Image (tube, rainbow, N blue to C red; front, side):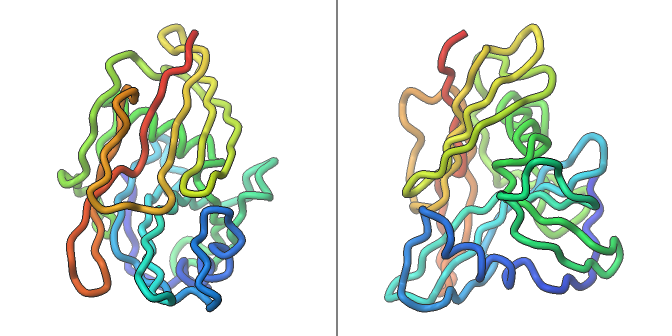
Length: 223
């Protein structure tokens, strides 16, 4: 169970994202620096208690219309070997000390727990409260077992999403899966009919409006 500490982070997550988001191919450029606010999200627990896992929504108000981005983040107490290209930066946490913050689509622990959520083996947690399930997160559980062991991945960013090609180990796991993580959130969006499982969640617009859409969808690609 992850403990949410009421403390400071320097720099903050939004400060790191302000520099990182414009480098992404799915960022909708406005010609100005992003003006970000945290407008939604949820967490998952790492069974080993080592890695923080958050699915953050950051809304950019720098353009003529706000754009909301879904950014899975992982927080680690040491660098993740071989994942320097996915590092947003480091931040000094008021309780835990230095944390290495990664684009979570490259972190095998986050990917494994997202697959566990899609298999019904993990429970979404509130973004800002310890030991508090978040029933607002909707999960269509995959009809076929997803993974029973570790995962290895390759990650490809598109114009609006990120495709995580997953090789899942374990006797019940298919040889390959495609996990499509939405980056530019669309209110009211639904998962394509060929998905075998998906996650939906809500976020807020700067004017206080409530929205909901697909955060991630799973496709089986064969055995």
